Length: 221
Image (tube, rainbow, N blue to C red; front, side):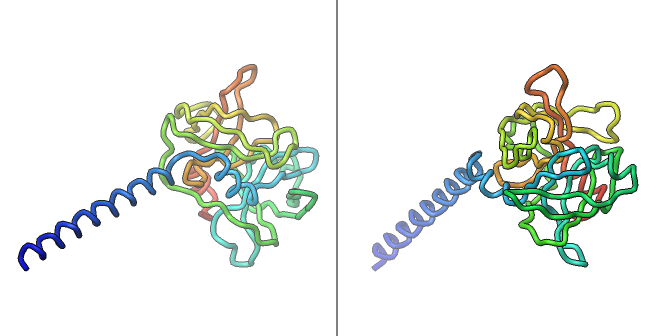
């Protein structure tokens, strides 16, 4: 009987070890970068935004407004032309659909702006963790007005540059005019930044405002 009990205990220990190993493998697989899965999860929350003559990208994010609808982030430079004229309405476009949105708040020092739409859209998750150099990311947006576009790359480094109140991070995913305001997303399908600019006369040098900066400035995450 003692031997049988010992055998059962040993078998139980082996099963526990196998379960822990399986759980570890699942976590490793889940943390691997899968651009197709990231795009599938993110793109329903990403829109082309039209602000007068300017176009860019906006994405749904944050808590639900008390008045209903959805908050969205974009860059302040995307909407500044209409904002400076006192106009507060812009339009969100995706797959032949068009939705009005209101500019709620602008922070030009960090190049971020908050929009609110009356419709409810799926919202992207953000993370407070600082993205690391070498981490793989995807960027969603509407380069040259081409909606539902996704590019991939890695985070290069953090930079302190003129005209920005805080740090931005550099990445090498391809972006073009129209990507401004688009989400930069990690392997966990979380937003880590907002694409804001690319280096002129250079390839593979994009810049993003960390999402923590936008969340702190606009207070909706």
